[in-house]
Length: 335
Image (cartoon, rainbow, N blue to C red; front, side, top):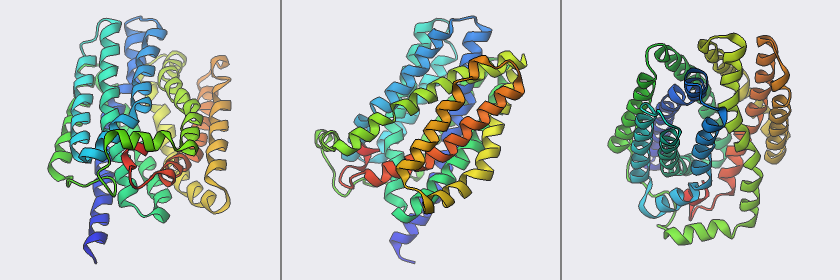
C-alpha cells in the first residue's frame, strides 16, 4: 500500500472519530436550549429563536472567511481554535440568565463553527476519492443520527439535575475534540496551493454557479433553525415531559441507520444530485406546514418522520454536490 493510500485510510478513521465527538458535544446542548430557556425559564420563544438563528447565520454565512483562512494557514490551527471557542460558548451558556448572554454564547459557538467546520469538510474532500464521497457522506450522516440520540439522551438526563452540567459536558467534549485534533491531525494543506485569504474568497464569489447554489440553500438552513427551536418545544408541550425530546432523535436515528445508506446508493444510480436535493427539501418543507395544527404525539411524530425522510434524501446529495463544485485551489473557501 502506498503512503498516499495509507494516509487516506487513516484519514477516514480520523474523520469518523472526530465527527462523533463533534456531534456528541453539539447535541448534548443544543436540542435542550429551547426547553431550558422557553419552558423552564419562561423566556419568549423569539428571544431563543434569535440566539439559534444567530448561531446558524454566523456559522453558515461567515464560513467562507474561516475556510479562506484555513486555505492560507492550514486546517489544524483553525480547527483547534474553533473547537475551543465553541467550548467557551457552551460554558458561557451555562451561566446565561439574560438574553444578551445567551446571544453572546451562541455568537461564540457560531464563530467557533465558522473556524472549524469548513476545514473539516475540506478534509473530507481532500482525503476521500470523488467516487467514494457520496457513500462516505452517508456514513457520516448515519453517525450524526446515532450521535444525536446519544447526545440528546445524555443531555436530557443531565437536565434533570442542572443545565450547567449539560453545558459543561458539551464544553468538555469540544475541549477533548480540540486536543484530539491538536495531537493527531497532521499539518496538512487543504488545497493544492497556499491560497491567500482574499484570493480564496474572490475565487468563490466569482463562481456564479456555486454562489447561486449557496443562495438556494438559504431555505434549508432556515428549516434547520425552525427544527432546532420549534420541534423540541412542540414535543415537550404535547408529551408534557422534556424527556420525550429524546424520542424525536431516536426516530431520526432509526430512519437514518436503516434507510440513509440504501437510499443514497439507489438514488445516486437513478437521479442527479440536484434532483435529489430539491426532492428532499420539498418533503422537509411540506412536513413542517401542519406542525402547528397537530394535537397528538402520534401525528407530531408522523410529521417528524416525514421531515427526517426528506433530510435523508437531501443531505447526502447536498454534501456531495458541494464537494463536487469546490475548486482544489481553495477547498476551505468553498466548503
